[in-house]
Length: 168
Image 1 (cartoon, rainbow, N blue to C red):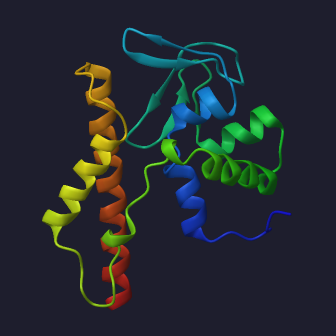
Image 2 (image 1 turned 30 degrees about the horizontal axis):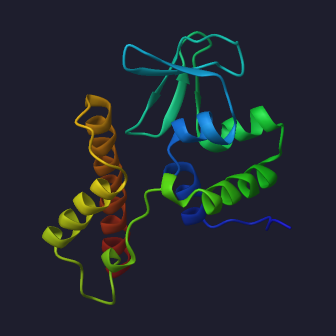
């Protein structure tokens, strides 16, 4: 049974830590294609391929019907689940596919009053990104690695803001 209450961190993680293209391709089996280096998917609303994903915000967009989708929205639409069951579906997907999730290593979390040194954080992020897969030298692989770093830096910046607010 899935809980009916979720913390904001839990929802944030499900929305931002599972790459939206992975949800589209692997979790929901939405038809997709790579057109000239751009990931396109079949919009579940209008059935057009005039779509794209923004890896920086982890959102999908249909330009034809002008809708944005996050992972939770897509699960609700495709699986026709309510919000609670959609969260349960994504939690199971996240648990069953840990290689597709790019978590922040536990040693990067702030312990007490001692923040991690930015050099160690960046070094760890580069190491994590490199361990995602072998470097084939392709532009797509490089873009995915850079995207991964950008997402991790965004999460790091958000964590720094949370720590700053809590210490105020």
